[in-house]
Amino acid sequence: MGEALLSITELNKHFDTAGGQVQALENVELEVQEGEFITVIGPSGCGKSTLLRIIAGLDTGYTGSVTLEGAAISGPGIDKGFIFQEHRLFPWLTVEKNIASDLPLGRPDIRQRVDELIELVKLGGFEKSYPRELSGGMAQRVAIARALLRSPKVLLLDEPFGALDAFTRAHMQTVLLDIWRRNRTTMIFVTHDIDEAVFLGNRVVILEPRPGRIRKIVPIDLPYPRKKTTTSFQELRLKVLNYFEKVDELELKDGAGI
Ligand SMILES: Nc1ncnc2c1ncn2[C@@H]1O[C@H](COP(=O)(O)OP(=O)(O)OP(=O)(O)O)[C@@H](O)[C@H]1O
Ligand SMILES: [Mg+2]
Image 1 (cartoon, rainbow, N blue to C red):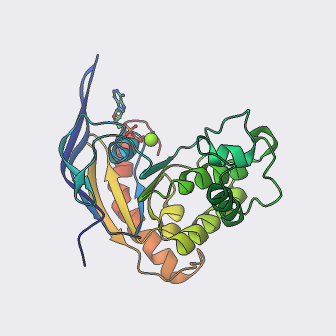
Image 2 (image 1 turned 135 degrees about the horizontal axis):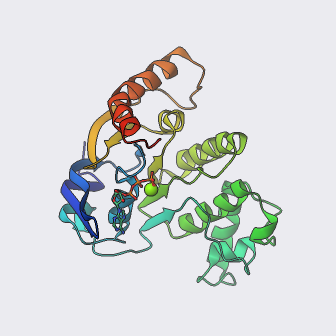
Image 3 (image 1 turned 60 degrees about the horizontal axis):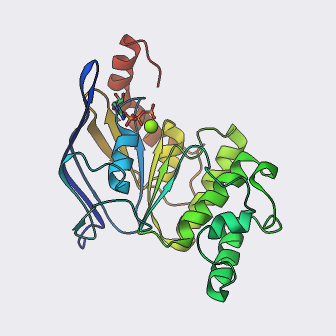
């Protein structure tokens, strides 16, 4: 294996709050290869968003080393796409203008890329629609297309399908895998959902809370497209669930759900 695209070593992050110090991440170590699909799972408050924000360059107050292609991440940039749980589209712009946003849609190369991306995220016919006219899943696809137009080295997704109903969510998982298969963009995808993590990821990173640490990294050695009903899928799901159980017990004691 060559040099990793993303290298995280001895990452520690704390927050100073009125109630004292919160250790959000402790000694996190992770190497991600180019083209990999990594899913990150863990209970609420275990540091998933904090980890993504650090990789995105949105938070630089940490110790340890986080590098992309060997260079320290010093701030946000278009090389790191970020998809949030809510789509964050501009309500006053059409789908195609949201995708282009600050890039000139009149430029032939941009126009062509936007058209290709609309095709890729299956939004043909909705180019001139406004966000209010879209379903949640469609709006998230616009957000993904907007990020991909910048050709990010890594796409960071923070529970992007968390607000969607089960059907739309399952559909979006398939759409995202199709995008990944065709584009080979490296993905780091945060979710609460074990099925989703096992369905999408080459590896599932399981985080535990207080302090946020990596409990286990489980490789998912199943070919794509995967089927959630197969025995091999269920076996891997149980394996992830097993590592999760201790974390889960901790959470229940605290009265918080996952
Ligand atoms: N800006 C902040 N100031 C103080 N504490 C913070 C801040 N951001 C996060 N934290 C704390 O750091 C810990 C990790 O938070 P984080 O948002 O990364 O968790 P998460 O795994 O994304 O949770 P969720 O699944 O609910 O989104 C939590 O204990 C949280 O309270
Ligand atoms: Mg979060």
